[in-house]
Length: 277
Image (cartoon, rainbow, N blue to C red; front, side, top):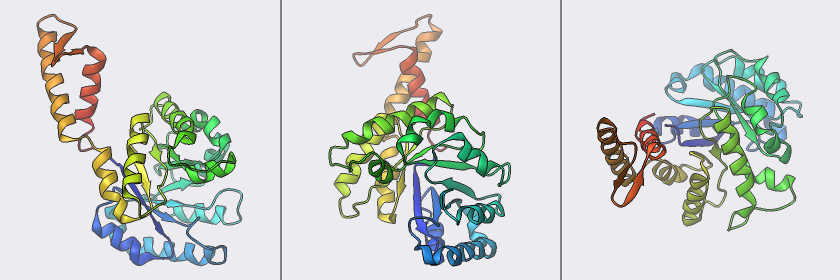
């Protein structure tokens, strides 16, 4: 189960290699967009091309490249560069419509995966249409910083402004039969407690992974998005007890003073089946 996606600047191949070798992140996103100054975009694209061509270790990790968005002059060549590496996925920033996805699909290989990054009000409203626009989409991701800029607000400590877009992406993903979406980055590297609160908020709304901007965020993300030992123990108990009840002709049971019926059983199975994916 992929729970952590670590952004690494494309102009730091040493950090990319270090992140791959560390093996703590479940996936790495090589960034050609926000982390790179405009004057360096073309040089860094070639740097990333060289890294992907020359480093065999790149094949040992699930990699994505976040290209520049379709309104920029860098977009077309970014996508063409990623298309040359079929094992590498593509993250598409500022995705707002199925048309944005089709533009990418026409330029990349059939087995390359796409993560649309939803960062605007328009993107949130069109989340389901985006999610079903191509079978190459692996899952949706949420970008809260640009989203809040777009709707003229800011990210708060209570996070109420993010409830709707997070929920919209969760519902769209489920309706489209995609994995649950990836939550936004948490930008305050000094606030581990705040990161933990954000993980719980996102998880409670149905998200199951997070974008990370520093390696020290990976451990809490991986730990808290994974089922706890208590979760696994309870799910195991539910599955065993309910299956025994079914064999005896019962469709609902009482377990530790809780009502267990088919939906609860299915949720327990999902918890157990999610381990190790």
